[in-house]
Amino acid sequence: MTAWAPGPNKYGFQLSFKCGSTSGKVTDLQAQPSLKWREYVTYSRNDFKYLIDPPDPTILPPGGGISFTAPTTEVLGPNVLSLKTATDTHWMPTSAVRADDYALVRQDPKFLPAIMESSQLYQYSADGATWTTFAGPFTLRRTFDRTDDAKLTFTTDKVGINKVTENYKP
Image (cartoon, rainbow, N blue to C red; front, side, top):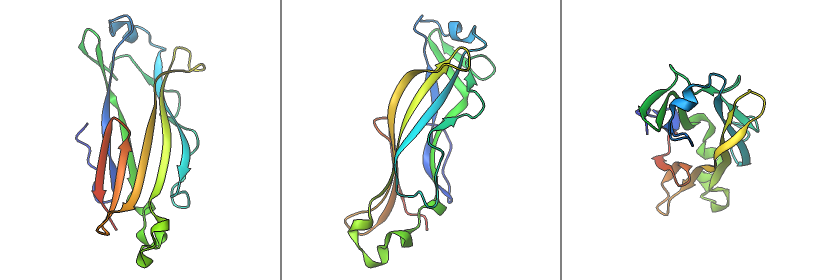
């Protein structure tokens, strides 16, 4: 986790990245200036599509990936590299999560939960054209729902990694 907080206009959380090398020395990664990594995200469900509709696939960062070289990285140990300028931010704007859109005033349970689900891969490339998956897929799930006591919540879940449930922010 990082110190990033979603605030009043967003839901979510942010993770930092660390990696190792199959050689056991992350300096091998740093010695390859053309070696880059990226996120590749595809969407299988989006109940919020009318308000937020990310490109499918979403490739981050735009423009060719992030280098494993300094100054974007920092060696923390012989085989631990911090990708210090890159973060994995999973967020949703509160403007895309509107209670009235889900007939909550009628308390009709068929409208909830509302879910956005995607699959995230981490990929690397030595040439910027051919990409190979090195981690994932990770399931990302954002859920707007009502608890048994009718409290509205929004959950951001990188399944098996981190999950945060927040009160609805009207």
